[in-house]
Length: 117
Image 1 (cartoon, rainbow, N blue to C red):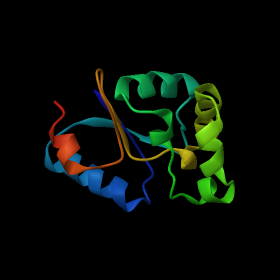
Image 2 (cartoon, rainbow, N blue to C red):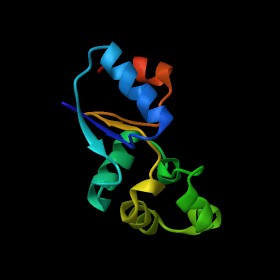
Image 3 (cartoon, rainbow, N blue to C red):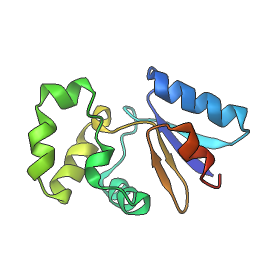
């Protein structure tokens, strides 16, 4: 079963959840603040996604902006960035859809349609 990590108040997460429901795709739902991804999970998911660790940051979020992470993200090591992401669910870009052989970050309908769910 796929893991759908979301923040229920996020409009993009709600769109993604509706898309999953409309396409009859069963997922295990996880609230990103109540059960933030661990550093270990993030390490695996970043590798599986094929994306750079920076793509996992919610750059439009309040926590990201308040802590001036724009410059930190450019210079910190992957290990430091993963620890930072694991420290606060609001730093993680959402929604995340995690499968056995893919990880989708954010919701772009065409990307989700192109993955075998």
